[in-house]
Image 1 (cartoon, rainbow, N blue to C red):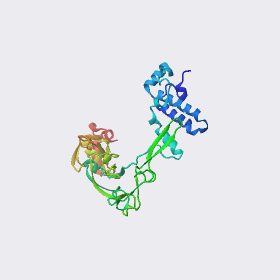
Image 2: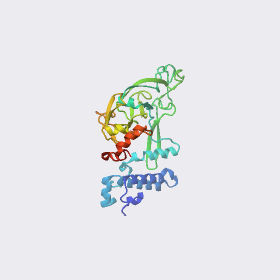
Image 3: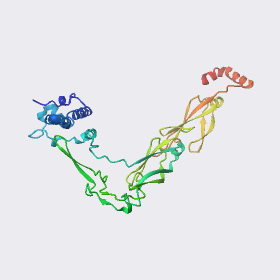
Image 4: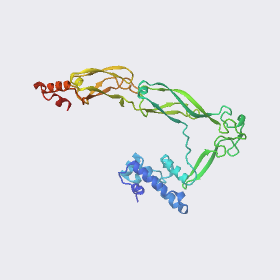
Length: 358
């Protein structure tokens, strides 16, 4: 009888790879032979069956052949599927990690410690505009200069008796249908290959000390909020990096959107009606003259090209947008009131203020 790989994994014939992977992981945990020692042979066969289905359905070419010709069309050799045909052991890494962790073995695959150091750098918008060198002070771990990282007084060590100086131990684990041989750091010497008889007085046997770093970091022009700057070799030891997360403080006058800047200015309604030029101090300190055209409306935006933020890792600048707020006086003198009423009542100006500012 032809095998129905879709039914074996409990998925539909149009299932996505993500759905197939999720189904396989659930079944692999359910039918793992080591969880059923009383019926190991039976569960070994079931585990092999679902793995065969997974191998076929996760491979585009094998799945196409299977959909067209059935399981007989997928050639695994004269003896059928065996573990030499399985090509998705990487997909089992997380599954086995969790499996062994639940059984008290720790991680099945060795995980490297993250030796990077992460700090934040707070900048004003003006600092982000200009970029330049910024001083950074932080602490990091480095090799003890007195014991050269051995942790032993005067650097004198003794070969580890557990691993015979290799720093590693081999573990053999039966997975029911196969054996996994793993190499892990020696628990006696923590992978160093030697043991310490007398600790270094400076680092207390750790082989590392904490130092304060004071470095200059180059901040690029136009740096954005959330940008990460990397300084290589300035993390833990000599192989870690310093990762700096840039945070841009809010500015009281300018707001940034991408490479563009936004600001607001207020002018009297008479200037909005007649037109004018107003001075504006840019984020860079440059003094700009903003031209207000006659009849400018409240809330109108004036665009000044090339006066935004520098484009990060590129050339040119964004634009500056100036929002015009029109102020209307609350208290008028008698003379001002008469002039405005006279202007509003002129035939050619009838409704002037209502139409423009109301």
